[in-house]
Length: 297
Ligand SMILES: C[S@@+](CC[C@H](N)C(=O)[O-])C[C@H]1O[C@@H](n2cnc3c(N)ncnc32)[C@H](O)[C@@H]1O
Image (cartoon, rainbow, N blue to C red; front, side, top):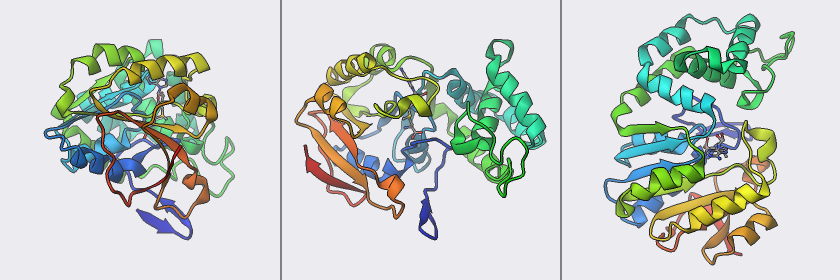
C-alpha cells in the first residue's frame, strides 16, 4: 500500500484499474479461506472485473486455481489475450504510442468489436482502461481531448510495471480459467460442478445504486432478485457477496448471515463507505483486522 498525503492507493496485482475494485479485500478473503480450512482452494469470481483479489491470491499461492468470469466481452478479451497471446500483447504494449491519436484508434476498436480479434479488443480494453478517467472504458481520456491539463493521457501507463504484472500473471496461466457468461448462467454451468469442499466464491455484483454509471453492463431490480435466488441456492458452498449499502438489497437477501463492513485501512473517506456483506451458512467469518465488521443488521 502506498500512502501519499491522506490518499491511500492500494497496490494491486491486476493490470486493470477498476472503479469500485475490491483488491483491498484480499487479506480478509485469505483469512476466510484459512478459517474455513479450504485446502487446494479453487477461488471463483463470477463478477471479476479487474480481478485484483483473484490475482493476489494466486500469485501469492494462497489458492491453487482461479476461475474468473465477466459478462463484459471487453474484459473477457483482455484476460484471454494476456493469457493466450501473451507475447503479442506485450509487443503491442511496447510498440503502441500513448497519445490522443492512438486513443481514438483504440476507441474505434472498442466501438466495432465485431471487426476485430480477441487480442485487438483485449489490448484496446487495456489501453482505454489505463488512459481514461477512473478507468471507465466508455469514458473520456485523462487530461481531456485537448491534453491541456496537468495530468496527461499517459500518467497511468507505466509500460515497464505493466509488462511485469502481465508476465507474472501469464506465468500462472495453467491455473487460470476465464469465462464470459452472465453470472446466473455461470452458476449453473460452472459453479454447480465444482467441489464444494474446495471452492470459495466471491460475488461482487454491480452496485444496486451506482452500478449503472460505473459499468458497461448493469442490473435492474429484478436482475438483483434473480441473482440473489441463485446465490442463496448455493447453501453448501463457501461464499461471500458484497453490495453497496441499500435497503432494497437488505430486503432482497433477508438472511441472518449479513453484516455491514468498512475497510479498515483507509484515511480517504470516500473509500471508507460502509458496504453490505452476506455469507453462506457454511462460511465462518474470521477474527479480522482487515475489515471492520460494524454490526449485525
Ligand atoms: C463491481 S464490478 C466487479 C469488480 C471486481 N470485484 C474488481 O475488484 O475489480 C462488477 C463486474 O460485473 C460485471 N457484470 C455486470 N453484469 C454482469 C452479469 N450479469 N454477469 C457477470 N458479470 C457481470 C461488470 O462487467 C463488472 O466488471
